[in-house]
Image: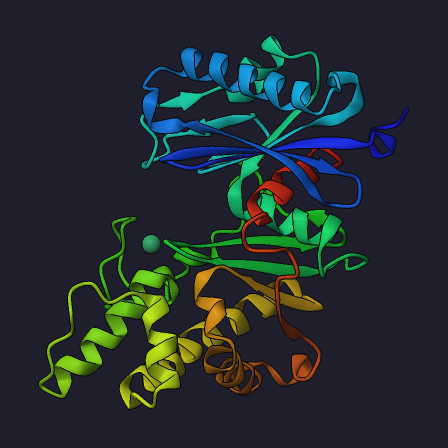
Length: 314
Ligand SMILES: [Zn+2]
């Protein structure tokens, strides 16, 4: 059987706190899940042992074996597709470079494919979501950070070192907010959930208003709904920032669509309506009216697992 004909694939989403595993059907339905506390492991070999066991348990629960899966896909922070390694991920306890593909293939007789989480999400959109049949698109993940996966001519763009597609760290304002990457004014500092809340705080401060410490990005949608003018303006400003970054991205890859995924996208029209307007204004004229801005069609809860599983069919 060719890879694509196997009835299942295993998707693994590695985060700093938890690792989520899912068994995904060829139609893109996650039928079983398993969890592992990433934080419990500071040593890569012990983590790989536990992860391999979790895969075995996942398959056993469905009464299938490794021969029934197309392979294992892993989405990980700083995951490198070329080397199959996780390189110096700041939010993981494993230090340095972890050759996770190699460690997993030594434990399980199947193919393991690894890349970073945003690239995995983009491939998930292509295999199971709204980008089916599209050869040129960009997927942006808005969350704790801002990630991106870029598909050109039907291929994921990895670049010469495997790390291409870091639009979250494209400079938006050269003297802007300090970014976790050590530079200033990256898109991530304005369009991540944290960055959006900061915009709201700054707007309120300018009006002499304090902002409750526990306010979240999710609250800003409810506040905008209830008529809070500064929350509404926060979404408008976020849209302007994103529009500029996305219009620049269009100039180098001419995508058919840009998909948005993640918590802030739940703001719906507060974000998407002004984004579409400002995006068109920012675009070079030859690109105007040609690139759609769409919400991801992968369910939020399953998106990371589906993306990882999609890698197994790569
Ligand atoms: Zn940055």
